[in-house]
Amino acid sequence: MPVSATIRERCRAMLGPGEDIRYVFPAVALPPPAMISFLVVVTNRSVTLLSTKMLTRDEPSRVWARYPRRTRLGPVEFGSGPRIEIDGMTLEVDDEYAAVVAAADAEAFSPGDLPRDPLPDL
Image 1 (cartoon, rainbow, N blue to C red):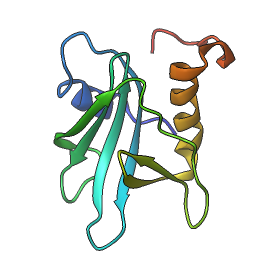
Image 2: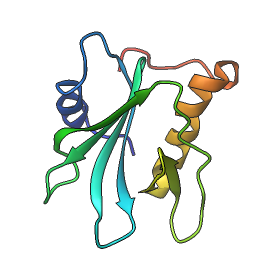
Image 3: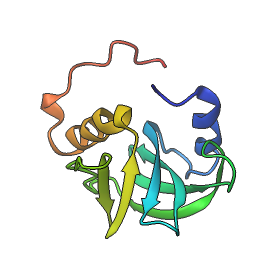
Image 4: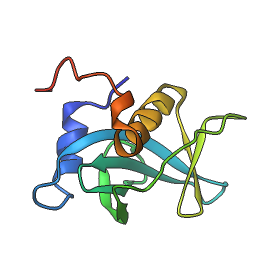
């Protein structure tokens, strides 16, 4: 399920001018007990990790890290839950966002493989 427009607007407020959000998905850094919740925001210019407030996964609190757009997110590793690795940090994502990770990588590394967006104004 895509994140809501409200969450996307909260994320947009923490990005640089001119950055256009392509994908947003929640993730949790592992291993426990140091679990940190993030919103991973993929824009036309960067992959940005926004840490979220302690009690809610849908309200970003600060920019944790920013990477170049050509940062590879996948492949998604499946085991006890879908996981990706960014800059040596393991992030667990919900099953429903595994396709989002694949789409974000395809857009950056093999854009010819993506279908045209049927709703480009959303």
